[in-house]
Length: 217
Ligand code: ADP
Image (tube, rainbow, N blue to C red; front, side, top):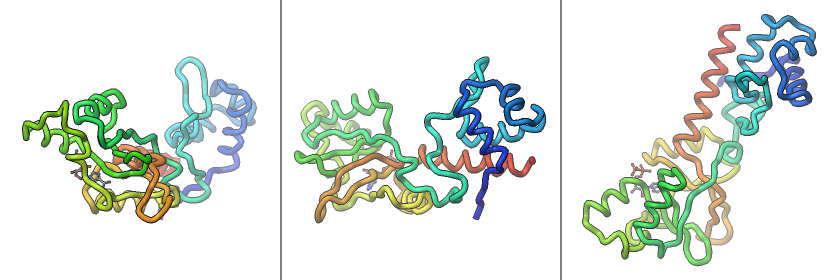
């Protein structure tokens, strides 16, 4: 399994950027006590991995949306809570039309559905919406509850599941996303976010770039 530890110099660079950001590559080199060409591979690795962000004409800053896990613990042990993103959801009574509008407004793919008490009750994907339109449903009157995939048939994940296990579930069930849930009581789950193919692709791209950089150094 691929695992990467940051070098002492890379850790020092992060500390310097945290303290002096935004800071240029030359200033980082001076403060860390190495030449610019020496630290160039470090800066490349730290930016590719999403730890630092190189702002054009300004300098390096610490990325406010980091991968969310440390490189010391090993990439694949990262947890769902480290990479999840906000979930978009509507009430079961919401019309198909309004749910579609919400999907566009929030730039989402899948939309989750909650019952009157706020517990997860369903999932509606893009194809579910297309089917309802092709089936000539009255999208202004019919609620999403009619077309959603319903509990208990929803594949979910939770904060402490590894991203690898989450990815396996998504592939095995051939779905685009899963709600991240918190178990409240028997059969009742609260949505705390989502994990999608997009989240996971971003993680694997970052890991790939790190591996590539490491190979070049
Ligand atoms: P698309 O319809 O855009 O291909 P998906 O592959 O995610 O998107 O959805 C396929 C079907 O699986 C849909 O009918 C959808 O309701 C259902 N589905 C989507 N996500 C889940 C999930 N997490 N658990 C169970 N069923 C899901």
